[in-house]
Image (cartoon, rainbow, N blue to C red; front, side, top):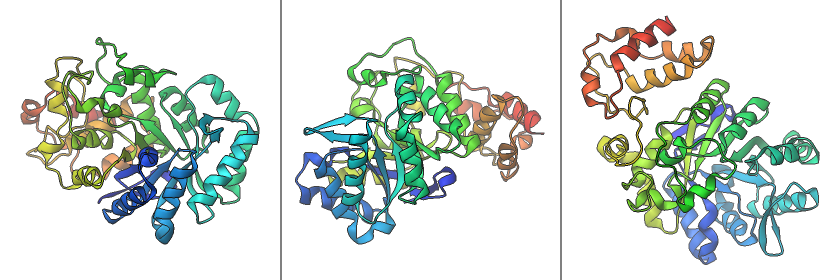
Length: 380
């Protein structure tokens, strides 16, 4: 398992994480064993947005003997009322729900205290201008939550979270289909098949979110990476073609600022399949060819950082140079952090000899040699 730094939290999290929402489907012993198997495979990040006692107790029992080896995303504002999940900012429900989470997870702390699920302006105001956010800050000040995070499906709300300065990481929905879609308060409706065929390329608001996160060192963990399983089925996929888990995991992990993708599991075999990403070949990880050859939608002319352009005879990491260029070109001045990252590359755009061998490999027709020249000029 490879591990990545989760932004300025400094936590080194597994590239493949554990999304816990399916735990309640099975008996307790099965789910406890599933989490322990994931831990044996090197997974150290688990998300617990679920308010139901069963799911929370399963996680607590599974990690009890190795609590300090796990990083838990625990959500504040996810409550259990009359046997049902309710997203709430009402402190009469928020406080006991979080205290229940804390008790069931164990250890006396939550690593990542997540402001739960803000997708709309109204909910942002409800959460950020009253006792709810005061409670979150107090938990952080007392060390009960070690870092403040926020979960959202809306890139506009995610950008606002990044700009607060106190949100250290976000849990965000990323997959090739979602990335094309404009900001919405009802993004989850896309899971029911309401997807516009005219969409193409990464939506500007999402590209701006990735830029902000990279610039401000706000880490991203990924949810909905498999589009509810629809991307595994050509008939349900908005692209008209099927992807594999390795391809979708690789897509998420090639987005700027992303540290981990949280996958849902029913079986040990599914855990093994996800973790197999770490030893997958370049061909097995290749999502770009799938998108480029899909009958619907297009990323033509747009770099997706897939790495198809390699190998470069000058040993330039073309995908990384393109990523840094895209992040820098959207700003009036190039941030020093991006300049330093660029200068730390063993080879950079200035080493490009314009042979264009990379361009014949690119499935999206990106004019790479031109971009290398622009990057060399931009970074100096």
